Every structure is written in structure tokens, then in C-alpha cells.
Image (cartoon, rainbow, N blue to C red; front, side):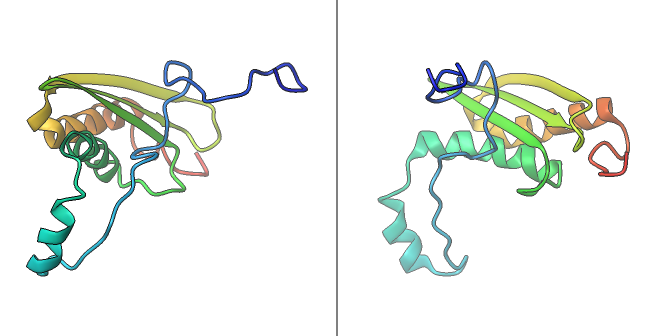
Length: 131
């Protein structure tokens, strides 16, 4: 326990979802650099790539940045993917969460669908700082 009585250590995702792609390491390269793509292929972790595809599609559809209160976590179980997402009003007055399940190869579509569902529930201006 910490001084304030709060347990130390990682916060479980059941209590708070992490930021999208939290903990993943990415390497950027030029799209047309086939030689570098071949070299980097040895470092690519397939299961992590599937999870990140879903999380990043979720973030992209929300037009999120590091300043937008968005959380997401994809969990891979064999060939099945479970994606949970949450969006919050910038002032903390409202949080909306949902989840989708599907084939791991459909992660992009799942992320997009989840984002659209949450945005529909939140309505226009959900992320507006002045709302």
C-alpha cells in the first residue's frame, strides 16, 4: 500500500482501460522501402499486430489524438478478438463504453464499428472542450 492507502502497481483493465496501443512499440518506415520492410518483418509480432489494427482503427474513426480522452484494449484469444472501448467527455462528466467480439482478421472493421456506435450514443460535440 502507498502512503495514501492506495495499492501500488498496475491498474487492471477491469478498473480502467489503457490508452489505445499502450505499451506497443512501433517503428516507422517509408511506405515504398521494400528492403526496410523485409528487415523489419523479422521484428513484427503477428498477434500484437492484429490487436493493434483493431485499436488503431477505433482511434482513427474517433479522430483521436493523445489529447482526446479515449481508451481501448483488444484481447486476442486464438482467432477471436475482443475489443473494448471507452470515450469520455473532456470535463469528465460522461463516459461511454462498449465492446465488440469477432474474428481477429476483422479487427479494422470491428474498431471502426465500435467507434461509430459510441459516437452515435455521444452525439455531436461529445469531445468538444466547451460542451
